[in-house]
Length: 380
Image (tube, rainbow, N blue to C red; front, side, top):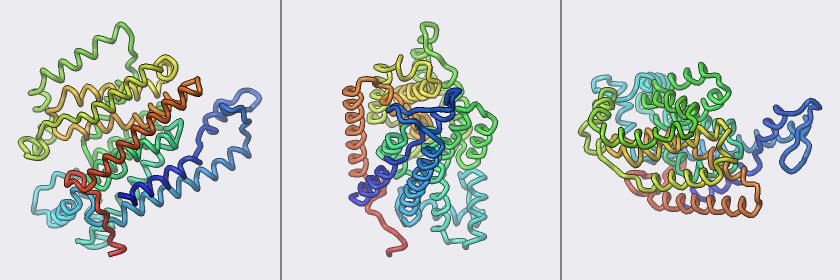
Protein backbone atom coordinates (compact mmCIF):
# COMPACT_ATOMS: atom_id res chain seq x y z
CA UNK A 1 0.00 0.00 0.00
CA UNK A 2 2.86 2.37 0.84
CA UNK A 3 4.27 1.87 -2.67
CA UNK A 4 0.95 2.90 -4.25
CA UNK A 5 0.76 6.01 -2.05
CA UNK A 6 4.37 6.94 -2.83
CA UNK A 7 4.01 6.50 -6.59
CA UNK A 8 0.74 8.44 -6.56
CA UNK A 9 2.45 11.25 -4.65
CA UNK A 10 5.30 11.29 -7.17
CA UNK A 11 2.88 11.48 -10.09
CA UNK A 12 0.79 14.22 -8.46
CA UNK A 13 3.99 16.16 -7.77
CA UNK A 14 4.88 15.96 -11.47
CA UNK A 15 1.31 16.91 -12.39
CA UNK A 16 1.72 20.09 -10.31
CA UNK A 17 4.10 21.46 -12.94
CA UNK A 18 1.72 20.76 -15.83
CA UNK A 19 -0.15 23.85 -16.97
CA UNK A 20 -2.31 23.86 -20.06
CA UNK A 21 -4.01 27.19 -19.43
CA UNK A 22 -1.60 29.12 -21.65
CA UNK A 23 -3.01 27.30 -24.69
CA UNK A 24 -6.54 28.49 -23.94
CA UNK A 25 -5.23 31.97 -23.14
CA UNK A 26 -3.37 32.29 -26.44
CA UNK A 27 -6.30 30.89 -28.38
CA UNK A 28 -8.55 33.62 -26.97
CA UNK A 29 -6.01 36.45 -27.17
CA UNK A 30 -7.26 39.86 -28.18
CA UNK A 31 -6.44 41.88 -31.29
CA UNK A 32 -3.05 42.83 -29.90
CA UNK A 33 -2.15 39.16 -29.66
CA UNK A 34 -1.60 39.43 -25.91
CA UNK A 35 -2.88 36.99 -23.33
CA UNK A 36 -2.59 37.11 -19.56
CA UNK A 37 -3.04 34.52 -16.84
CA UNK A 38 -5.12 35.13 -13.72
CA UNK A 39 -2.09 36.59 -11.97
CA UNK A 40 -1.54 39.16 -14.69
CA UNK A 41 1.52 37.45 -16.23
CA UNK A 42 1.85 38.05 -19.94
CA UNK A 43 1.93 34.90 -22.03
CA UNK A 44 4.25 35.02 -25.02
CA UNK A 45 5.35 32.51 -27.60
CA UNK A 46 8.52 31.95 -25.60
CA UNK A 47 6.55 31.41 -22.39
CA UNK A 48 4.30 28.96 -24.16
CA UNK A 49 7.29 27.12 -25.61
CA UNK A 50 8.95 26.70 -22.22
CA UNK A 51 5.71 25.58 -20.57
CA UNK A 52 5.01 23.12 -23.36
CA UNK A 53 8.43 21.55 -22.83
CA UNK A 54 7.78 21.25 -19.10
CA UNK A 55 4.33 19.80 -19.77
CA UNK A 56 5.68 17.15 -22.11
CA UNK A 57 8.44 16.11 -19.73
CA UNK A 58 6.05 15.81 -16.78
CA UNK A 59 3.39 13.97 -18.79
CA UNK A 60 5.97 11.49 -20.09
CA UNK A 61 7.18 10.96 -16.52
CA UNK A 62 3.66 10.33 -15.25
CA UNK A 63 2.95 7.98 -18.12
CA UNK A 64 6.13 6.00 -17.51
CA UNK A 65 5.35 5.48 -13.81
CA UNK A 66 1.74 4.41 -14.40
CA UNK A 67 2.54 2.23 -17.39
CA UNK A 68 5.47 0.50 -15.67
CA UNK A 69 3.44 -0.28 -12.55
CA UNK A 70 0.64 -1.78 -14.64
CA UNK A 71 2.78 -3.61 -17.21
CA UNK A 72 5.10 -5.22 -14.64
CA UNK A 73 2.31 -6.67 -12.52
CA UNK A 74 1.43 -10.34 -12.45
CA UNK A 75 -1.66 -11.81 -10.79
CA UNK A 76 -2.81 -8.32 -9.79
CA UNK A 77 -6.47 -7.54 -10.45
CA UNK A 78 -9.51 -9.59 -9.53
CA UNK A 79 -9.79 -11.19 -12.97
CA UNK A 80 -6.14 -11.40 -14.02
CA UNK A 81 -6.04 -15.21 -14.15
CA UNK A 82 -9.56 -15.36 -15.55
CA UNK A 83 -8.35 -13.28 -18.49
CA UNK A 84 -5.40 -15.63 -18.96
CA UNK A 85 -7.80 -18.58 -19.18
CA UNK A 86 -10.04 -16.76 -21.63
CA UNK A 87 -7.05 -15.85 -23.80
CA UNK A 88 -6.49 -19.58 -24.20
CA UNK A 89 -10.19 -20.13 -24.93
CA UNK A 90 -9.97 -17.51 -27.67
CA UNK A 91 -7.08 -19.42 -29.24
CA UNK A 92 -8.82 -22.80 -29.06
CA UNK A 93 -12.10 -21.33 -30.33
CA UNK A 94 -14.05 -24.23 -28.79
CA UNK A 95 -15.63 -22.33 -25.89
CA UNK A 96 -18.16 -19.46 -26.09
CA UNK A 97 -16.48 -16.17 -25.17
CA UNK A 98 -18.36 -13.09 -24.02
CA UNK A 99 -15.62 -10.75 -25.24
CA UNK A 100 -16.46 -8.44 -28.13
CA UNK A 101 -14.97 -9.22 -31.54
CA UNK A 102 -12.47 -6.37 -31.43
CA UNK A 103 -10.81 -7.62 -28.26
CA UNK A 104 -10.81 -11.21 -29.51
CA UNK A 105 -9.11 -10.09 -32.72
CA UNK A 106 -6.52 -8.14 -30.71
CA UNK A 107 -5.77 -11.20 -28.53
CA UNK A 108 -5.38 -13.46 -31.57
CA UNK A 109 -3.02 -10.95 -33.17
CA UNK A 110 -0.91 -10.76 -30.02
CA UNK A 111 -0.85 -14.56 -29.74
CA UNK A 112 0.41 -14.76 -33.31
CA UNK A 113 3.24 -12.38 -32.43
CA UNK A 114 4.30 -13.42 -28.91
CA UNK A 115 2.92 -16.95 -28.53
CA UNK A 116 -0.30 -18.60 -27.44
CA UNK A 117 0.16 -18.56 -23.65
CA UNK A 118 2.42 -15.52 -23.40
CA UNK A 119 -0.18 -13.39 -21.64
CA UNK A 120 2.10 -10.80 -19.99
CA UNK A 121 2.72 -8.82 -23.24
CA UNK A 122 -1.04 -8.72 -23.83
CA UNK A 123 -1.61 -7.09 -20.45
CA UNK A 124 1.32 -4.73 -21.14
CA UNK A 125 -0.03 -3.53 -24.50
CA UNK A 126 -3.47 -2.90 -23.00
CA UNK A 127 -1.81 -1.04 -20.11
CA UNK A 128 0.18 1.10 -22.57
CA UNK A 129 -2.87 2.37 -24.41
CA UNK A 130 -5.00 2.65 -21.27
CA UNK A 131 -2.45 4.89 -19.53
CA UNK A 132 -1.77 6.85 -22.72
CA UNK A 133 -5.41 7.72 -23.38
CA UNK A 134 -6.15 8.40 -19.71
CA UNK A 135 -3.33 10.95 -19.41
CA UNK A 136 -3.94 12.53 -22.82
CA UNK A 137 -7.67 12.75 -22.14
CA UNK A 138 -7.19 14.46 -18.78
CA UNK A 139 -4.64 16.89 -20.21
CA UNK A 140 -6.81 17.86 -23.18
CA UNK A 141 -10.03 18.39 -21.21
CA UNK A 142 -9.08 19.61 -17.74
CA UNK A 143 -8.90 23.29 -16.79
CA UNK A 144 -6.72 22.39 -13.80
CA UNK A 145 -4.62 19.35 -14.59
CA UNK A 146 -3.11 18.61 -11.19
CA UNK A 147 -6.47 18.64 -9.42
CA UNK A 148 -8.12 16.53 -12.11
CA UNK A 149 -5.24 14.05 -12.04
CA UNK A 150 -5.27 13.85 -8.24
CA UNK A 151 -9.02 13.13 -8.26
CA UNK A 152 -8.52 10.55 -11.00
CA UNK A 153 -5.96 8.68 -8.93
CA UNK A 154 -7.77 9.10 -5.60
CA UNK A 155 -11.00 7.79 -7.11
CA UNK A 156 -9.16 4.56 -7.92
CA UNK A 157 -9.80 4.72 -11.66
CA UNK A 158 -6.18 3.93 -12.47
CA UNK A 159 -5.78 1.13 -9.92
CA UNK A 160 -9.07 -0.49 -10.92
CA UNK A 161 -7.70 -0.68 -14.48
CA UNK A 162 -5.63 -3.61 -13.19
CA UNK A 163 -8.96 -5.47 -13.39
CA UNK A 164 -11.58 -5.37 -16.14
CA UNK A 165 -8.90 -4.34 -18.61
CA UNK A 166 -11.29 -4.11 -21.57
CA UNK A 167 -13.61 -1.75 -19.74
CA UNK A 168 -10.89 0.60 -18.52
CA UNK A 169 -9.25 0.73 -21.95
CA UNK A 170 -12.63 1.83 -23.28
CA UNK A 171 -13.10 4.33 -20.43
CA UNK A 172 -9.70 5.80 -21.34
CA UNK A 173 -10.84 6.13 -24.96
CA UNK A 174 -13.95 7.96 -23.74
CA UNK A 175 -11.74 10.46 -21.91
CA UNK A 176 -9.64 10.95 -25.04
CA UNK A 177 -12.74 11.43 -27.22
CA UNK A 178 -14.00 14.33 -25.10
CA UNK A 179 -11.76 16.87 -26.85
CA UNK A 180 -13.55 16.08 -30.10
CA UNK A 181 -16.93 16.28 -28.42
CA UNK A 182 -16.36 19.72 -26.92
CA UNK A 183 -15.01 21.09 -30.18
CA UNK A 184 -18.23 19.75 -31.77
CA UNK A 185 -16.35 17.38 -34.03
CA UNK A 186 -19.02 14.79 -33.46
CA UNK A 187 -18.00 12.49 -36.32
CA UNK A 188 -14.51 11.74 -34.89
CA UNK A 189 -16.08 11.48 -31.43
CA UNK A 190 -18.63 8.91 -32.59
CA UNK A 191 -16.02 6.98 -34.57
CA UNK A 192 -13.85 6.63 -31.46
CA UNK A 193 -16.82 5.44 -29.41
CA UNK A 194 -17.88 2.97 -32.11
CA UNK A 195 -14.32 1.66 -32.30
CA UNK A 196 -14.29 1.30 -28.50
CA UNK A 197 -17.56 -0.66 -28.67
CA UNK A 198 -15.68 -3.46 -30.41
CA UNK A 199 -13.88 -3.89 -27.08
CA UNK A 200 -16.77 -3.21 -24.68
CA UNK A 201 -20.30 -2.69 -25.99
CA UNK A 202 -21.51 -0.68 -22.99
CA UNK A 203 -19.61 2.35 -24.28
CA UNK A 204 -22.32 2.97 -26.88
CA UNK A 205 -24.36 4.48 -24.03
CA UNK A 206 -21.91 7.38 -24.05
CA UNK A 207 -23.18 8.84 -27.33
CA UNK A 208 -26.81 9.47 -26.28
CA UNK A 209 -25.89 10.19 -22.65
CA UNK A 210 -23.32 12.84 -23.54
CA UNK A 211 -25.49 14.46 -26.19
CA UNK A 212 -28.46 14.70 -23.81
CA UNK A 213 -26.25 16.01 -21.00
CA UNK A 214 -24.66 18.58 -23.30
CA UNK A 215 -27.87 20.05 -24.68
CA UNK A 216 -30.07 19.72 -21.58
CA UNK A 217 -30.52 23.11 -19.90
CA UNK A 218 -32.21 23.45 -16.52
CA UNK A 219 -35.11 25.84 -16.05
CA UNK A 220 -38.62 25.84 -14.65
CA UNK A 221 -39.68 24.10 -17.87
CA UNK A 222 -37.30 21.17 -17.42
CA UNK A 223 -37.14 20.49 -13.66
CA UNK A 224 -40.02 18.01 -14.01
CA UNK A 225 -37.68 15.64 -15.86
CA UNK A 226 -35.84 14.73 -12.65
CA UNK A 227 -38.75 13.12 -10.73
CA UNK A 228 -40.06 11.58 -13.95
CA UNK A 229 -36.69 9.98 -14.69
CA UNK A 230 -36.50 8.67 -11.11
CA UNK A 231 -40.02 7.23 -11.38
CA UNK A 232 -39.21 5.51 -14.68
CA UNK A 233 -36.10 3.94 -13.21
CA UNK A 234 -38.05 2.68 -10.19
CA UNK A 235 -41.22 1.43 -11.87
CA UNK A 236 -39.85 0.27 -15.23
CA UNK A 237 -37.50 -2.25 -13.67
CA UNK A 238 -38.72 -5.25 -15.66
CA UNK A 239 -38.60 -3.76 -19.20
CA UNK A 240 -35.23 -2.11 -18.48
CA UNK A 241 -33.75 -5.43 -17.37
CA UNK A 242 -35.20 -7.21 -20.40
CA UNK A 243 -33.57 -4.64 -22.68
CA UNK A 244 -30.22 -5.09 -20.95
CA UNK A 245 -30.35 -8.86 -21.31
CA UNK A 246 -30.97 -8.54 -25.04
CA UNK A 247 -27.41 -7.24 -25.34
CA UNK A 248 -25.91 -9.11 -22.39
CA UNK A 249 -27.88 -12.37 -22.01
CA UNK A 250 -25.08 -14.01 -20.00
CA UNK A 251 -25.65 -11.45 -17.21
CA UNK A 252 -29.14 -12.74 -16.43
CA UNK A 253 -29.22 -14.85 -13.29
CA UNK A 254 -25.45 -14.72 -12.83
CA UNK A 255 -24.61 -15.15 -9.14
CA UNK A 256 -21.94 -12.44 -9.31
CA UNK A 257 -23.00 -10.02 -12.06
CA UNK A 258 -26.79 -10.02 -11.68
CA UNK A 259 -26.94 -8.88 -8.07
CA UNK A 260 -28.59 -5.74 -6.71
CA UNK A 261 -26.02 -3.61 -4.95
CA UNK A 262 -26.50 -0.19 -3.38
CA UNK A 263 -23.26 1.79 -3.52
CA UNK A 264 -23.68 4.24 -0.67
CA UNK A 265 -20.19 5.66 -1.17
CA UNK A 266 -20.89 6.49 -4.84
CA UNK A 267 -24.25 7.98 -3.93
CA UNK A 268 -22.49 10.13 -1.33
CA UNK A 269 -19.80 11.25 -3.79
CA UNK A 270 -22.32 12.18 -6.46
CA UNK A 271 -24.47 14.01 -3.90
CA UNK A 272 -21.47 15.91 -2.52
CA UNK A 273 -20.36 16.99 -6.01
CA UNK A 274 -23.94 18.03 -6.76
CA UNK A 275 -24.16 20.16 -3.61
CA UNK A 276 -20.80 21.86 -4.25
CA UNK A 277 -21.80 22.57 -7.85
CA UNK A 278 -25.16 23.98 -6.82
CA UNK A 279 -23.53 26.35 -4.31
CA UNK A 280 -21.50 27.92 -7.12
CA UNK A 281 -23.84 27.03 -9.98
CA UNK A 282 -24.36 30.54 -11.37
CA UNK A 283 -20.67 31.38 -11.29
CA UNK A 284 -19.06 28.09 -12.27
CA UNK A 285 -21.60 25.98 -14.12
CA UNK A 286 -24.35 28.02 -15.75
CA UNK A 287 -23.31 29.22 -19.18
CA UNK A 288 -20.24 26.95 -19.26
CA UNK A 289 -21.22 24.23 -21.73
CA UNK A 290 -18.54 21.82 -20.54
CA UNK A 291 -19.37 22.30 -16.86
CA UNK A 292 -23.11 22.02 -17.55
CA UNK A 293 -22.58 18.70 -19.27
CA UNK A 294 -20.49 17.26 -16.44
CA UNK A 295 -23.03 18.59 -13.93
CA UNK A 296 -25.80 16.75 -15.78
CA UNK A 297 -23.78 13.55 -16.06
CA UNK A 298 -23.18 13.61 -12.30
CA UNK A 299 -26.92 14.06 -11.76
CA UNK A 300 -27.67 11.14 -14.12
CA UNK A 301 -25.26 8.96 -12.16
CA UNK A 302 -26.88 9.93 -8.85
CA UNK A 303 -30.29 8.92 -10.20
CA UNK A 304 -28.95 5.59 -11.45
CA UNK A 305 -27.07 4.77 -8.25
CA UNK A 306 -30.17 5.63 -6.20
CA UNK A 307 -33.00 4.24 -8.34
CA UNK A 308 -31.53 1.54 -10.61
CA UNK A 309 -29.72 -0.80 -8.27
CA UNK A 310 -31.18 -3.74 -10.20
CA UNK A 311 -28.98 -3.02 -13.23
CA UNK A 312 -26.19 -5.63 -13.46
CA UNK A 313 -22.71 -4.14 -13.10
CA UNK A 314 -24.22 -0.68 -12.58
CA UNK A 315 -20.85 0.92 -11.95
CA UNK A 316 -19.76 0.07 -15.50
CA UNK A 317 -22.56 2.33 -16.71
CA UNK A 318 -22.08 5.04 -14.11
CA UNK A 319 -18.31 5.36 -14.47
CA UNK A 320 -18.88 6.80 -17.95
CA UNK A 321 -20.88 9.50 -16.18
CA UNK A 322 -18.96 10.16 -12.95
CA UNK A 323 -15.60 10.37 -14.72
CA UNK A 324 -16.71 13.92 -15.46
CA UNK A 325 -16.37 14.75 -11.76
CA UNK A 326 -12.61 15.04 -12.19
CA UNK A 327 -13.25 17.98 -14.55
CA UNK A 328 -16.33 19.51 -12.93
CA UNK A 329 -14.95 19.88 -9.40
CA UNK A 330 -11.72 21.66 -10.45
CA UNK A 331 -13.78 24.02 -12.63
CA UNK A 332 -16.00 24.87 -9.66
CA UNK A 333 -13.05 25.34 -7.32
CA UNK A 334 -11.24 27.69 -9.70
CA UNK A 335 -14.37 29.81 -10.12
CA UNK A 336 -14.53 30.75 -6.42
CA UNK A 337 -13.49 34.38 -6.29
CA UNK A 338 -12.88 34.76 -2.55
CA UNK A 339 -9.43 33.40 -1.85
CA UNK A 340 -10.28 32.18 1.63
CA UNK A 341 -13.29 30.19 0.46
CA UNK A 342 -11.38 28.86 -2.52
CA UNK A 343 -8.64 27.56 -0.23
CA UNK A 344 -11.21 26.13 2.20
CA UNK A 345 -13.08 24.19 -0.47
CA UNK A 346 -9.91 23.05 -2.23
CA UNK A 347 -8.44 21.70 1.00
CA UNK A 348 -11.77 20.12 2.00
CA UNK A 349 -12.15 18.37 -1.36
CA UNK A 350 -8.52 17.23 -1.35
CA UNK A 351 -8.77 15.81 2.18
CA UNK A 352 -12.04 14.03 1.38
CA UNK A 353 -10.61 12.38 -1.72
CA UNK A 354 -7.37 11.48 0.05
CA UNK A 355 -9.33 9.74 2.80
CA UNK A 356 -11.36 7.91 0.19
CA UNK A 357 -8.11 6.88 -1.51
CA UNK A 358 -6.77 5.45 1.76
CA UNK A 359 -10.04 3.57 2.33
CA UNK A 360 -9.82 2.20 -1.20
CA UNK A 361 -6.26 0.97 -0.67
CA UNK A 362 -7.13 -0.59 2.69
CA UNK A 363 -9.67 -2.71 0.79
CA UNK A 364 -7.04 -3.49 -1.85
CA UNK A 365 -6.56 -7.08 -0.71
CA UNK A 366 -10.31 -7.74 -0.98
CA UNK A 367 -10.93 -10.37 -3.71
CA UNK A 368 -13.34 -7.92 -5.36
CA UNK A 369 -10.42 -5.50 -5.91
CA UNK A 370 -7.25 -7.58 -5.39
CA UNK A 371 -4.58 -4.97 -6.07
CA UNK A 372 -2.66 -5.87 -2.92
CA UNK A 373 -0.17 -7.28 -2.27
CA UNK A 374 1.65 -6.20 -5.43
CA UNK A 375 3.58 -8.82 -7.40
CA UNK A 376 5.77 -8.27 -10.44
CA UNK A 377 7.06 -10.79 -12.98
CA UNK A 378 10.23 -8.66 -13.32
CA UNK A 379 11.27 -9.08 -9.67
CA UNK A 380 10.07 -12.65 -9.22
